[in-house]
Image (tube, rainbow, N blue to C red; front, side):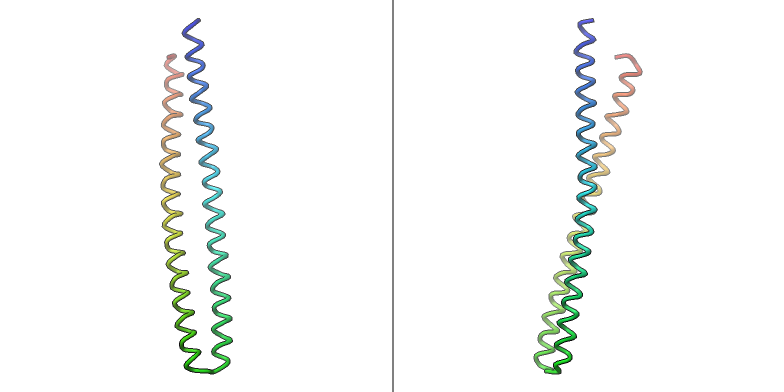
Length: 120
């Protein structure tokens, strides 16, 4: 009987720890989705704003100024594209880490189930 209490305590501790990891992983997944939406919205707003500026400058038909400003706008678009690419890489890394964490959690869960089934 005295050995049963520490075993139950250990088992409950592992279950609680696994639950905390599961909640944390779900939270990360939601954050990744939110970041992805935010990035898309930001990129769309920036592109629309830059396109509007470009249209305004072309309409003014000040060729030297328009060319210079077009170059600036295109440079800004390139920078935004680079940032989006970096963010996509970060999101991919987060997804890979999440998958690794889920795999680890499943392995711990399976181990606990085997341990429980074997009567240890």
